[in-house]
Length: 473
View 1 (cartoon, helix red, strand yellow):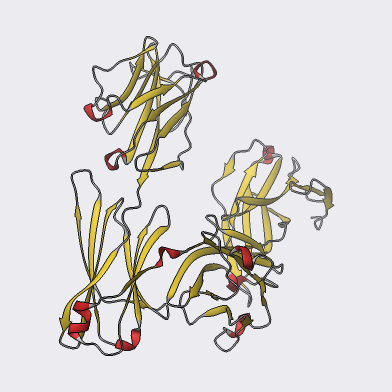
View 2: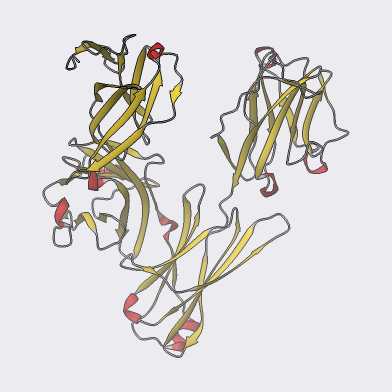
């Protein structure tokens, strides 16, 4: 339960305090490190503070009578938890979990009580751990190819596995088994049958889905699939000689402007002589290719020709970026940057979010049962969210919305509200970009007699007053 007035133990509601924790907040913590679960409330030094799992009796930590209480504490948390007391007098409390383990993953409730009044809030802890690098080896011949096995252990949560050819294309057909040890860590074993020796190198990559971090191993497939050769001299090469990293957060671009998609190698090294490629969902969907120290346009998608360029300023320091000029709505989405040196390659994913939108316009029309108010806004991407609010800030729940998309993929929306109570005063139409969390709004005055000879509105983002007219009735 998130926030709200304080409750008492007899079931009646009180308003003494409320606990605060965002309903959307998740804590991501690495295995073996420390994680803190915080909550905020009125002065909490003399309260009972309790953090528990799915049941009240499953106590992670209890603070009562200004000291820690261990009698009800779960065994697996004894000696691993402590209270952060620095801001108790300001209403903030946090429990520190030391040496985080896989079983710490999941939901927690923080419970604060003062006398008969209590409140609680939920927080989710996501534990993530990157295990061993995959070990790849050839176990034997198949009737029409060879069997390659990849094993990785010590991962949490269950990792995602991919097999890729030298070209970057993914193998879609392979088998996978998994097991969890006593500590909850995953070991995976995946088997691929390579039937085409022209595949060259094949790479097994293991990805942590929470952290977005992966480890990979590449093995060479000789042109002649000789069984004895495989067993005597299997040649495996680790791609950990360098890693490619991209931005951890989405890149936000304004429609019609220029934007850069940066990636870099770690450890830092000169990438001038590498093949650098940015592509969409498939390796062949090239946005930009840099090879042999020059741009290659043969494989480039038509919609990116003449709109992309390489930022070369920091190539010798291991940093490269593609600049997309005159951003369009179809540029929105996922990209992969791929760096290759000889037989070694690595890649990283990044996300581009495109946005734009006009300020909402509005008009009013008298009806027998009130006034119909129409709000229109165009040029938004992606599809925006619309709200109508009264002067008090209360939301109108009943209104109609229509939408349309133009040839460039931009949205135009029209939202119609019927105001039946002239005491509403100002009504405001808000249009929100769901990705950016940014909104544009327009408000205007509803006269007492529903007479629209004059409508006054303002733009909350710009702050400038505007005066608009409607046809007199």
